[in-house]
Length: 281
Image (cartoon, rainbow, N blue to C red; front, side, top):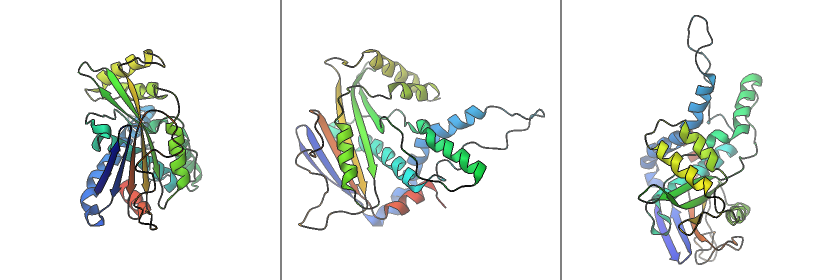
């Protein structure tokens, strides 16, 4: 992946172009990242089933996470892929030169309509259809100080299309312009982390609760940052343009007065890549 970045005060734009010759090298790591991002949702489904219902103590034969998420519609998987890559960008492209952004968890367990659809598919054997996406934040990254207090939140919008979609770009920038300083999914993150066996999860829970109780104006030591990650399968071909999103100034639909980081990622054969990393037959 070749990355070109432009930086100017409160706005940054990074353009990443895939080197197709190296896809096979990147794939195993990408598949692992995708699987890890969805593991919480799978584990939650299995916990809900609980122990065996068989009086003889035989284990449950039905796995409620079977086929999740690869059986879902490709449009749903594109959305998932965009959310995961938004987190990858936050932790690896270091928005505004800050190398300590962390994504504590992904919010996939709250995509309720997708789990309902999987159950319906099991019962009726219908094919997966397109369902509305989850409301709230796509992905969230945070910075913590030496005492573990959250000092910055990065609101990450992720969009993914196999071609190019100007409407997606506009929508991402509009949503990123909303006025709330605290994420609306803080309590959802806390719920996920309370179920985690990771040793660091408890510290994240404390930090997120502290931020939640500070209220809508957390104070002078805290800052909201915004990020738009746009993944597409086709780049511009006219007038020597290299990117769809402006590199020198924010998109017209971004109206907030905050620091904005944009990552524009051009990939080859996006749908094939997504099917491969999700293990779609």
